[in-house]
Image (cartoon, rainbow, N blue to C red; front, top):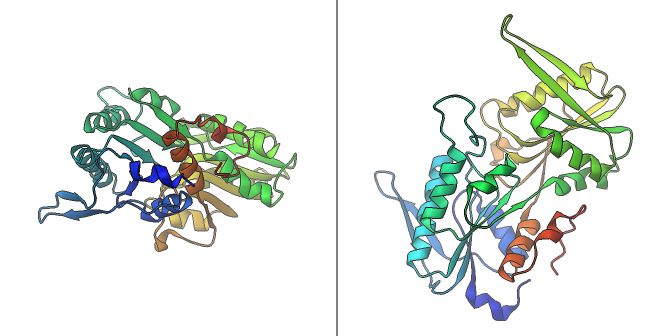
Length: 327
């Protein structure tokens, strides 16, 4: 909890994407969310009114740029502008889920790098710092010319398995593809397990896939790991391959529950026993089902905000086991 004497110069605001998480973060800091109104003009334009004085304050704005992504990005930009014009000393943007992060490079000719464009827009609007959680690609930090604190949710996901003693040599952490290998290695360190990799290759000649599993999964409990679950096609097909190769139980873990398109149906019908995700993205009731377990990132983000505001190092948040202590 923050020193009460410091509170007059410190504010937390939230927009519409994930109010529930923002309220938890504010509660962890012993504060209330700042007063602001987000509404729409008749033509759909976003209107924001800040309903209290923030002159000279260090403001932390919490907003996941999840679906509808364009609406939430625009809300963020307008709010930053409003805060700057209201004489906030700094505007620090806390982004539990960074939309457009998958567009981080030119994979084909004449493609945009939209993750960089969003970074440019945030800076131009007046953001002084970004606190982000599990960016899809770590190089996105370099798209900014302002400080970026990149937090990781892996230890929070690992806690679910540690508490249930799903650890050790009989467990295998499985990367859903080659890009998820570093996450799998980190999770395996937490759980003291070996890793495996799903190697999936597209064969254009006969319009089919070749799938190889690098590692031993027969007779093992497997934990599939990735940064996000979107349509769920990748993770459910990986789970099916693991079962066909002798895995006894399959769990899935991901920081961001995007859950778009047919994902709910795919996950419900899959052999995955439990899907462990965080509350970085708000899950409405229709996207919550028996297999899904949400762990909160509120204490991690609250601790990061507190440390940044008090000019303390955030490196303790990257220790092997995060316990959410508010020193």
